[in-house]
Amino acid sequence: MRAAVDELLANGHSALALYGQLLERVLADGVDPAAAEGGEGAAAAGPATAALSDAQKARMCRRIAESDKCLADGADEALQVMDVSSYLSQVVCKTNTV
Image (cartoon, rainbow, N blue to C red; front, top):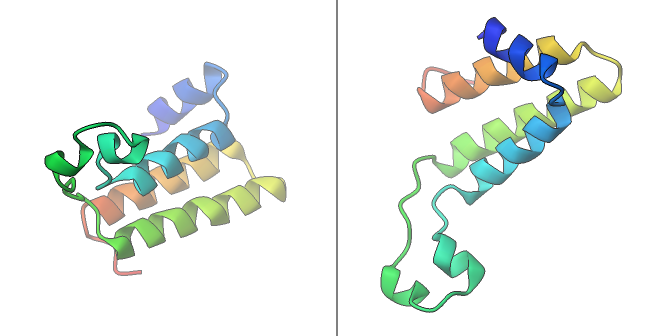
């Protein structure tokens, strides 16, 4: 994981940009893209199946927000991204009890 985070940051991507994309993906989980865009046939397609529970989404969003605050306070970007990545992995695998 460290190598992936180091490469991501070395390529000029910021933690804040990553967090923004993560939040979009987490919050869009289970939302039918056609319904979200108001496209035709959205009602016929039915609701999309959510891979994440609301509790998982809440834990993920909270950790991202906490990390964002740490970054604003001057924390190391690489450590924060690794922390968030590890935590999100645990939440998705349902091994986190927090």
